[in-house]
Image (cartoon, rainbow, N blue to C red; front, side, top):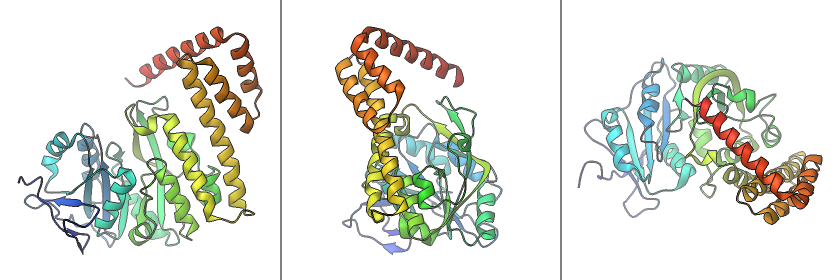
Length: 359
């Protein structure tokens, strides 16, 4: 058995046996798992899920180790990634500075939960395996939580880069935050919590991520987090570079809309029917249902299935009264060929535009 396959049973101070589900391995070689002492009393555990990120994770880790305030420990979770062989080769130069955890695929929620359980620091910072931190991320976030003991979690601003029409733009210019990050503000999208957060370990461990949710799991977590009485703070300093990739699930708008709708419907159980939150949820569900129907309608139209496209756009009109949707349905019924041509042309123009922004 190679050193990359040797299972270790102690995770975050808890004894586990090989037979206890979920099966998780902490793999060590030489001094792997040795923590990096940080100045001050804030010990930060960095959690990095890894799934198909072998080409990017070295850059991600270098951004962590270039921090002005060192991490206490860095935990990389291989979530049953199909590129494990390549990933482990890329991680080899970092092996004396990380804790490497290997598990069967459980999705992003499961990977983060494993990291949260394994973490031994006072604070936990989440970082996706293809994103980058600015050098002062840890220092700025720990200082915020030290200065604001009333908050249990803090998020910051980020800069888009990679395969995105938003490349070079700030996250908060597209997904704004205004006022207190209450459940109502998160539901209504008045506060959009950026996922690379730092939180007090006991608070995040208490809430955790719902492993039945395969996307938009962060929104579900933030709603439950604030519903429990925990408070979320934020500031507008850009501390993260947020990479968009065509291969990532977040690049699939239909997938994202479907899971967003599931999260919103699930969240209804948290409040009575007459509450403000329920009213906002019903409004958000109607809007997301319309958005999903429009996305599916466009997909059907691109595939040349006009009849199915009309059905989807008609469904969207039930939830979103729009002159544009009404005109679109009318044109599809009277002159479907024209609309199909316009959609194909628009797709080509968008692809061309996207290509010029990602060089």
